Length: 478
Image (cartoon, rainbow, N blue to C red; front, side, top):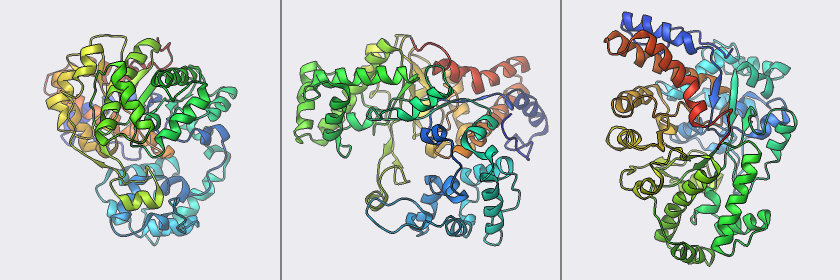
């Protein structure tokens, strides 16, 4: 059983009759196992199963939701222990980091970060004292004492959180050694509890730092001649095979836009050659990314991997932050994203082929109603991913259901993904999603738009059966 909230009516409708129905529906999924088909937890944490170092390094340092908020108020990430890539000194004392964070706790009022943290403190660690500068040491000591106990090691928490399946994300250059260790221990491999996900951005995006060197390394790993476009495609197929052998059921593609293009082999090879020579323009890089999405869709039909597309982030917008601390530390910003015309070449080629499963996400919620729900409601291959990243909040989760259900229904959506590096927040985030769905379904029942028995079946599907089906969890990926 996953940790339960001390606030039984958290996020339920305030209207009494709807609240009563929401309670009834939520009870059906409260204790269901968690399916986490997309996230960024370090697999080494579970492979090694060593105790977490301290509360700050577990909760604050890896969570860019938290560190970026303090940066917005002038607190450098180095003062919160975020590793530096430029040699800048970084705070290493966990208690100092925790105290500094507690001093700015008021910044998180009304944010999902505060909700997730309060629920994590209370329901994972049993700490119900309100965080403040005055209570920082008390809370730090209470959590630190528990982290020293065997039942708070990663695998024990995995069991306690009632996680059935957790997917991590690795590049094609990863040796998958951590997943091999998990498999040897009975935790990984095909059908295992911890799965890898194939994310090839660093060998596809010509604007990725070190792209040409990454492509060369890809060739060394696979024994293919990646100096040629044909060898490059062969190398990607080999790595996909290795990921499937390690348990992967899906791929993930984090492109700036959703653009897809169908280029001839000669046109693609010309772009590829310009990239290797360092002559590619930004337009070349965008065209090659767009072409490769269509190539990856073709590969997914061949090998059965579910395809995920996460467009819309302007990566490393905060150049100072990137120069000091590197990627994935809170410097990315959403942008408006077009899907209807961008996805047309891919959908023309493969959109009606049920062998393809393409899960599309957005950081531009205005596209839910205008583009994404109608597309998912009109193509056999397309599913809507849950609101993620900047949109992973109670308000947007509600708006998502309101925006897409009338056009796409419930069964063209792919279930919730927590998309997190913060391991201890996983049960909290899934619980929030289940509560929001309970409230939305309760309103449909109260308005006499959906019978209670059908709402009960639907909420179980949304929480458990749909993500397993769409991401082929526990079944052959073919």
